[in-house]
Length: 160
Image 1 (cartoon, rainbow, N blue to C red):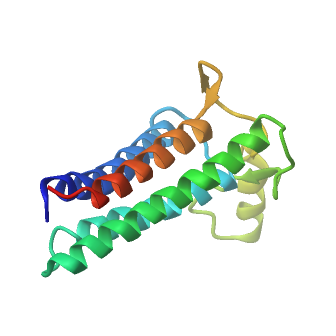
Image 2: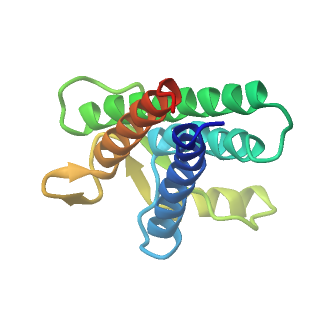
Image 3: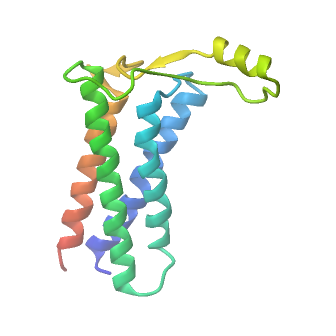
């Protein structure tokens, strides 16, 4: 792989990992519970980390390049979901779902599960829980993911 392609591989692994760590940190340390669409944005990143990680260990230049390209497409998919989610938050269009409930684990009986559901916070997909300079977390995911995916693809095209 060329230097540019090695950089693309590093970004394909590091960017979704950093975004996931940020999302999980904001959830578990910052108390920002994810809505359903937030979870949708995470799944392509989980896959991209695994696939890009594989590009560091598989033999064969062509296979490594293919894995980096697949990771870039997954990162772009998360960014596209982020665009959709941000549009729902800004009320540019209607979302597929309006809210999600986060259920506490450990409930074993029906009464305990019902109590956990009733006590869980209701997280709406159409209301941003946090913004910086008017940009929500979904908006930042869209910007960083789409920009990162385009960067990876551009680096993969460049030759020495």
